[in-house]
Image (cartoon, rainbow, N blue to C red; front, side, top):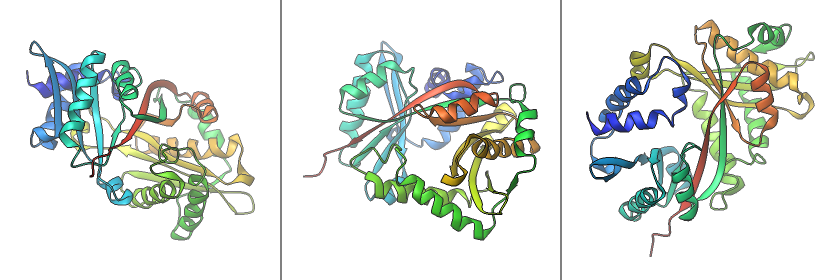
Length: 319
């Protein structure tokens, strides 16, 4: 039994895909082992803490190229991490910093909220909690498809044209300038860089083949909302488990259209577009304080399944 397989079986319980009945810890362990044996060419991308031969903490990490380039600093993202006690969580955090402090300026952890020892140790070690997201899962058996179809009936919703992207970009810029995202609230980044980074993500997203974007218009043919959903279609994942799933990207509603129906109709269209491609599982992600979106998720048949924190720390590593 390889260490990656063991780590995968542990990580299963802290990954939102454990919500799928088709995925068991053993199946996930095999997938995890194959995935990361390819993506981790050497020990520089993984840290393991052991006690008497047993894995008690681990982290898998790498450089976030997009954020590093845009924020003009080397950003290390911890993609998967876990610790079975506070002491080993602290050892894990300090050993990663000690090893990489000369190479990186900024570290991002995104642990599951039920990974309590790791989240406590991060808080104790000077990491700033900047975001908590919750995921609602809908499936073929839980989504209220009659409601979704009713919400799009008669609505002017379509795929965007090149001209529509200007409207979307303008709405994004206004929305992200005030939206309390994980970048916005971090004083090391701030509003301007946060807005520019999200706009960059939007530009990247609209070019990817695994996203589906729609825009809506009011009865006077004026732009109202946009939304896009991404499809998790990693070949290895599909080969192991036999299905794809969707997860929400962003949505935006201009002020004059801001009501529940406007948001619900664009979300409904996104979910129905996936169903037309025989993709019935979809996560709707939102920040923990966003009760409006959470109520929408429940209304259409979503079930809360997963919550994840984001922690930031800027390293003082240059003399």
